[in-house]
Amino acid sequence: MREEVEWWISAAHRDGEMADVLLSRGFFEGAAFHSQQAAEKYLKALCIFRKAAWLRTHSCTATLEAVKAQGQTVPDPVMTAARKLDAHYIAARYPNGVGGAPEAFYDQAIAEDCTHTSRLVKEYALGIIGEQR
Image 1: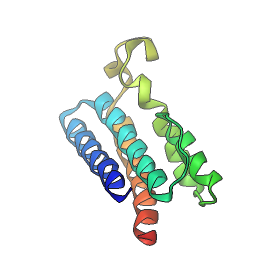
Image 2: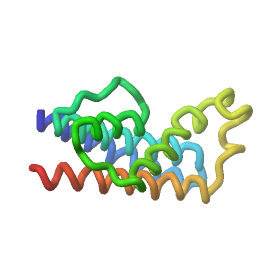
Image 3: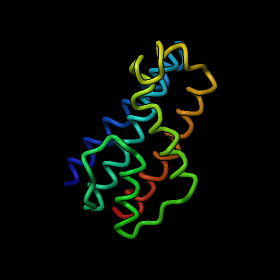
């Protein structure tokens, strides 16, 4: 079980790093998507660590609901971060998700917000994993 948790954390770290690189290069929609992916993977690591039932979903919000159902407290700012990030899972990648080329709907401020909110989810998930090891 611990090895699988580490796999998810490693993948999440890489997505976070990709988000930072894409942000620095002006690929704002990619930064938003990889920010969402990083948060999702940190939360899946948390679910596996806590042996919580998690849905096969790409929703950070749904994954946090599974964590809450197991009795873990989830602060409101973390839930808000999850909701904000979930909006970018499709919109940042597919033209038919936003009604045009995704890059036309993203800018630096949106991408920076995504990387910030992703870090909030990261700190939450790794904080619990670290406390309970």
